[in-house]
Length: 266
Image (cartoon, rainbow, N blue to C red; front, top):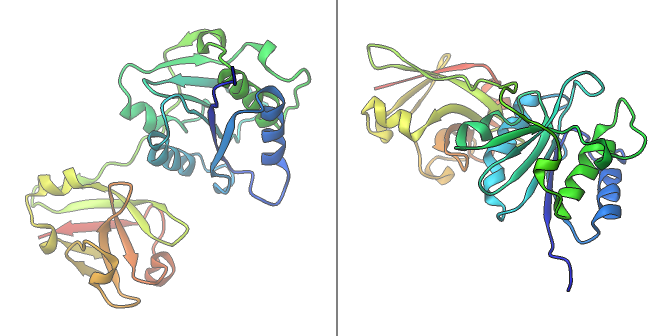
């Protein structure tokens, strides 16, 4: 009987120039050559655990049941930081214990977490700088071969978390939002979802959004609702409100960045 094909995904900050990602795939292929390894992103900004958490949180549940997600954005590599495995209803996720799993944990009920300590699943020789090759890759491949996640190590209750900034609704009905992520197109993704807008009890086409001296009136349903190089607000694929520029880069044109505040009102 042919081995059932497993899916392993990768999110790393290794980039595309060096051979790090390819070596990880080589290690996995040596353990399970039938695994289907899919790159979600290998161009996370170096050591940006918040960005990795956002990318993972917005993508992990679009994969088939049984997918093994591997995140190697690991500024603490070689230190005493833990490597953990999160088991949800449909997925296994391997990551350093630095908060990159925070948004998944927030979404998942009855998820369990184990510290990965079973050295028998690691490569024989470990470096202090490339646990992606020596630990994450072989462990993911062994899991795809049917190793039980319970064999990885003991169950743990506490892990490090990244807190998503929450929008603040003032008594006068104004909402202070924050840009939490800027994607490769320059779209400015905020911490405001549709539920927050609904609580404001205002029609989306009448919401006023102030960004310093600039202002946008209303939330659009498509980029074509405005002219070329005009700014707009729209709910993006992540489900969060984005500030964009039709056929342009909002971050560059509006001079806004992660951490900047917006004020929404009537």
